[in-house]
Length: 69
Image (cartoon, rainbow, N blue to C red; front, side, top):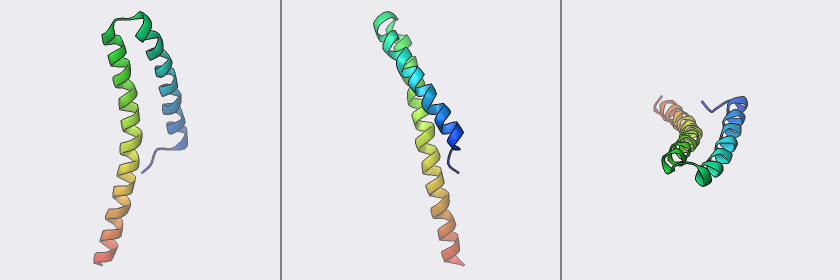
């Protein structure tokens, strides 16, 4: 199942805000702050990619089940 459009848009907005925060943090904060902001950005990106991968996987599994019958 893919992400709903509303959830994907919200994640994209969160990423934009986090990129902005990362830019400020890189100039003004300790490096570990930037590292953790970058980790959250990566986690959001992973959510989007894994969700798409799972949807493709489900589709392939259903096709395999249909082919066996």
